[in-house]
Length: 115
Image (cartoon, rainbow, N blue to C red; front, side):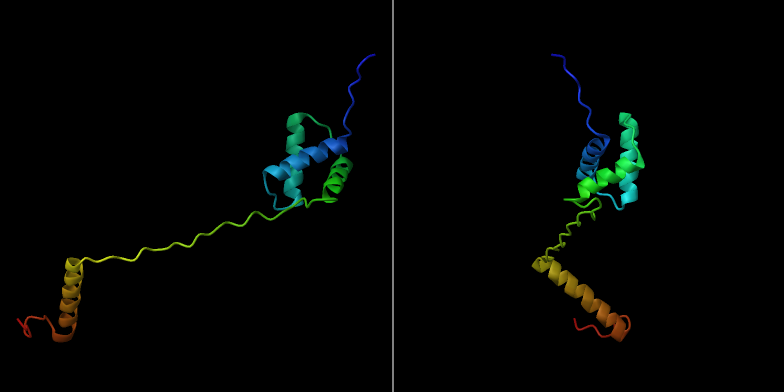
């Protein structure tokens, strides 16, 4: 009994390739998917017709969408840790702000020194 190699119909072969393509990446349009399919077929040396591609898309669209939006990016809100001042830092910051205030309201700040 001789073994005969059965050929997969072109439509089924193209449908398998399309499933692989849409499983690996997201396509923004059918045009982008078709271009990727044609490139894959050229690389694998698979002959195709427009009819074969349309039929492969019909087979896949019976249970799945050809074009899907990209997955949403997960945005994790940034949580800033509160600034922790030591007593020394707080005193230095207060002195700086007090000096700035005195300069703006009293001129140089030297004339009305309280010390």
